[in-house]
Image (cartoon, rainbow, N blue to C red; front, side, top):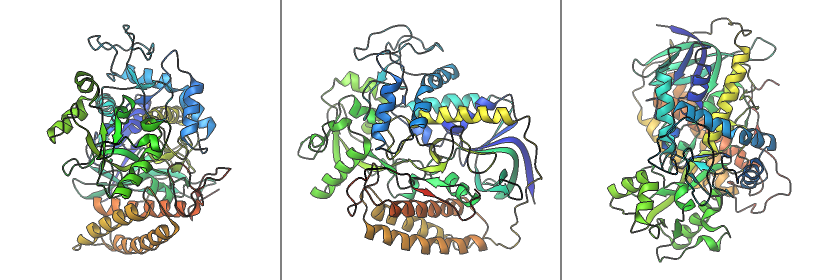
Length: 549
């Protein structure tokens, strides 16, 4: 049975980016927000550190811009950086107005929706002061946070507002399969999306005037990751198949400090732990980061991750350690209650002993190419958040700029859509999903086997340190794997696992191809065959076969 629903705007993804664009459009359009599982089960929820913004009188837009440009290793787009930073205060004020409970200097002062008045190194207290912390790469305290669970606070607040709005319909357990594009026009136009309803296993067609991809990154392509299971690069893969360019897919950020414990899975030890004095140690107690960079633990993440990777391989160690036990125990528990409790549950008391940590795939700095409105190469298709490439992050994302980018570009996209709503006409209803030639699979073991193989060779060959030989091996493997997946996809009905595997394999191929094309080491991309950095930086832009100029 063919099912079609019609909306003004379909938002694919319910994290900070998707929720913000939906709330900014609420009351002006009929909106559907699609989530692969629960609305809250995205990367936003797991962000611990906070949001970077110019909020202190001693800080400046210039300083934040310069820090970001420095961390981006020569590949940041200066206009995108300035656009984001200049809108940082208004983005935070909007989140405060939404009710996000950011931590204040004086905890017994009840939060209000008043604008930010700032903070400083000495932590003077005033009625509306918010506590600002500092993270790697930042020259000032500019990270506004909600204890050590900022993402959860942002997600809970925005989703609460989302569910209360009558013009927004939320569709949980719905997985986007492919975008629908009308090509018989001067420029291709997105007219909707095919979606699998996981509760019924039926594919429905959503007809829309605008589609917004807010699907997050692709770190699940790696065996070890800090990301939730849904981070399978769906938006990037769908946009590529639809005809959108992607850029800088070789820049995969590995978070230096993921908790190393068999029961921890993907739990992060926030960057803020290092920002508040945490030291990285070897098993013999040696503080090794000063051996690699003058900024020690406050160096950008790529430098810290490579240093840890180097020391682990040199010593044959399973992990290194981060130690903040020299700080007052009340300070640690107050600032990092989530991390403290999680570690304690696993038998680690961070107030008395170091925490074992390892690097893990964390953030996709490349993505779908967009402009400063979040517009893609296809008319009426937008991409925001981690799935997009705005030029903000360059070759290495600076800590806590990601949630800021989500809000700033989501609002920019919403403003652009609002300006087009009255003038954008409905196009012909998109085609139904045809599954008349497929059957149910009786060999799902193939999916799980390919999923595991893909993530293992990406970790081994396309990880923190790369080489020509490793990349060639990965390219050979991914081509065979994609061919096998394509044959399987053409014969059997789609499932959530098959959709994700198909997307992961596509994104893996884009990452590998981008890494092969970069004949230098820069930012997050380090190769032993080209260890030097070119004098002039360039973006790696890939064009899909069906790209329309």
